[in-house]
Image (cartoon, rainbow, N blue to C red; front, side, top):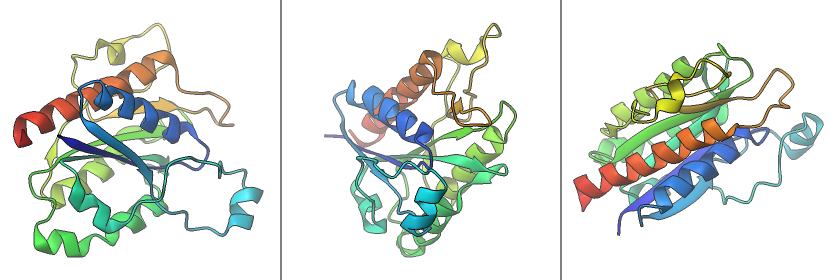
Length: 199
């Protein structure tokens, strides 16, 4: 059975919601799907004072977990147009897997969230994709089979480089149904691609 990992970091819960939608899309193909998060770097007292969402159900991932999957879909909120330090630190620890070629040929994809409509979503997606390419992974984007990314009558995330959502400057905006549909579509396409490559 094709095994998919949805690996994410989410300070305020928006990326967590997107991760679960991606998992739904992948599960619909019959794949085995796990959702895991990368460890938090800040002390719990700082996380609480910053109103981080600390009650996330997903277990923390380890670097060795990455070996066990045919596809890894990576998501994190933007930090000034790039990935969060929590995700960067986690991926930086995968040098041993890189040296072994342990991730070569696995399928990879990216997703993100940002506070504003032009808050660095595409550069963040590319910062994730750059890592995945260095790991030797085959990249799948959010292709235009998902027409929801082309709508103009509503503010929405989504680009050919990955699924995304816009949280609003105060974090009050939650992923819309269109953004969640894009996430589910990405999960489905990644799983289908992994099945073709590793089936």
